[in-house]
Every structure is written in structure tokens, then in C-alpha cells.
Length: 164
Figure 1: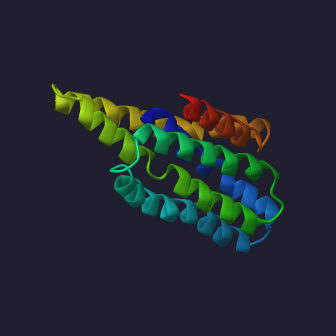
Figure 2: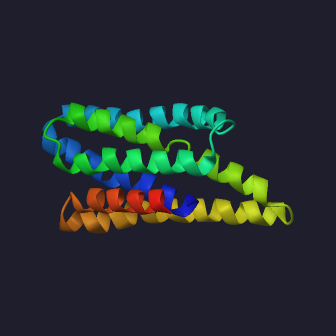
């Protein structure tokens, strides 16, 4: 889950600036792209905090399922936006939906891992870093075919994660 979640999160950095540049040509596109990307990280940071608090009352599996479902609902429309401000709103919603994935995954792992804790958490960290390194590459490869393909693929993977 950490691998897939990080792969998905890092994949947006390869396509969103290009999408913003298509929606808002000129020098303003650079600022707008920065705002769009930052909005997702900002709401994700808030979500990580909120998810940590909610996980004390709501099962992590349920929170993950809800988050991944909302993420798919935010990602798919990104492929069809015609205004960068709508992309901004969707990216902010996506950040909030999945910002707590790492928090929940590490919390769940911490409850289950009883021996070889350092090695186990090193493996989780490696999976996270590996997903983060592959996200932009896969997104770039798909985006070279069609800029919407990474968004379609991300929405589908979010749905698979929600079901899982």
C-alpha cells in the first residue's frame, strides 16, 4: 500500500504542470502549477494529522477505503478539466483524500510488527521510496502517449486500492 500510494502521489508532479500550461498559457502557468501542486501537499498535511486523530475512532481499513474512493473521484475528472481553478480544487480534494495513507499504513504496521521492528520498518520505507521513484517515470511514459493516460491509470489504481 505504501508503494502504490507513493507511486500515485509522485506521479502527479510529472503531468499536472503540463496540464496547467495547456489550460493557462504564458508565464502565469508556472505560478498556477505551483499553486496546484502545493494545494495537494497542503491539504495532504492536514489530512495526515486529521486521519491520525480519526483512526482512534474509525478502523484504518474503512478510512483507507473512503480515502481511495474519494481519490478516484477527484482524479478522473482531472483528465477533463477546462479551467485550472477546477484542477486546483480537485488536487486539493485529492490531497485531503490520500494525505493520511502513510499515517494509516505505518500505524497498522506498528500494531502488527512485533519482532525485527527496525528491519520491518526499513522495508516499509524502501517500498515507499521505490514507489516514489517509479511514480514520475511511469506517469511520464504514459503521459508521452496521452496526457490523460496517467490520470485514467491513477483513478483505476485508486479504485483497486479501495477494493483491496
